[in-house]
Image (cartoon, rainbow over all chains, first blue to last red; front, side, top):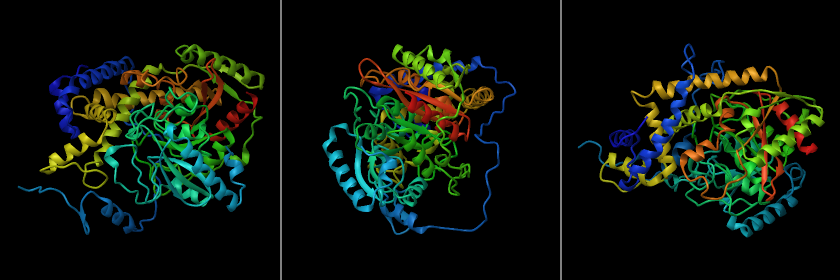
Length: 96
Length: 443
């Protein structure tokens, strides 16, 4: 599998990450190298194998439906956020 | 350095002296760069904490620029359990950024040095924790292991590192890298200390839905004299360096002399582990790291609009290896490639787990190398692919969720430590520690 510049651009959009012009070639090469290697999985016959994996097949344990809320946590996050005011995070204008 | 077992016997005055002494030693060994902060929380025996485990009000940063300014709003469950057991969190240890790496070189705080040889990597990602214990500037430490991040630095630095069964230790408060693979575990001076610290941090926790809710402990039943059947994997060892091969052969002889039964077993070619691991881990990392957007935590880059804010914050905040893995994760999850890569890797994970199940129907433990060589020199693993390949012995354990313990077994001609790992079946930490304790005494 070879990554090209167009595909890298798509991945940047999905990742919300911008790759510097001078690093593009290197990244393309590194990603392609790994994916070429990872194509070895095609050698394995996985027909009939479950396509979802869970470490334990036991169902997740249940608990009583008791509401709880530790406001100390949200207050601390808001206080230490880059920009916040009372109960809100401040962000640049979203609606034009 | 005093052991954890000994430290737990100290009275409060002796503990205070120990803490003062420890601080002096850490400051005197600053060039190791094992610690990135000297915060303290809780009383009791001081334990060094990897910089991705939440300790309330500490600046826990996963060694990333993107989390500068963040303050942990609560204690991880492992920290709560430590406090209840008379241990205190003491200092943040260096790591690869977001636990993605094998050398600590991707840390925003710079690399940690290997106390055995300053020109060599301490291993990663929990390199700071392993170097602190090996360098005599921590009694014990916590690390996290997603693909070998406890066991490999322990092997490179010559200390004990243990990865519990997936679900044994609560992940509540662990900065998530790959949620289906991550486990917190101990890095210690010896096997008994690892068992003590493992007992303290493991156990049920309603705050982690993937927690196994099991509370059985190993220390009360530790038995180094048990005779076990131990699987060896000759096809795996073939690919290791001469130093590691020699140490492996010698260890097998010791195990035989101890009265264990040795049995040859085979596992899936490690090249498939590497593919399945990096596809799974990067896919999960992409999802977990989506939360770092400059709005809620840590750093925010200047921007005119919201999209620019996301892109600028993430482009400036994440380092190269993290960016590479996010891009790769988005590739394997994206439409058109999802089935061929992500789904295929999940199917292969079943094969890897089944292979181990088959082996463990015949043996109690498996003896395997931890890394293909002793600690490489800085810069020796020049490309990401070389680094990924060096994980060949550790990652299948995470893919199958097994417990494993890395134990220093020998030194090469240059005096560099060589570690081997014992691997057990899920939830069989008792046999893992029994086997490791016996081997440690016999070496």
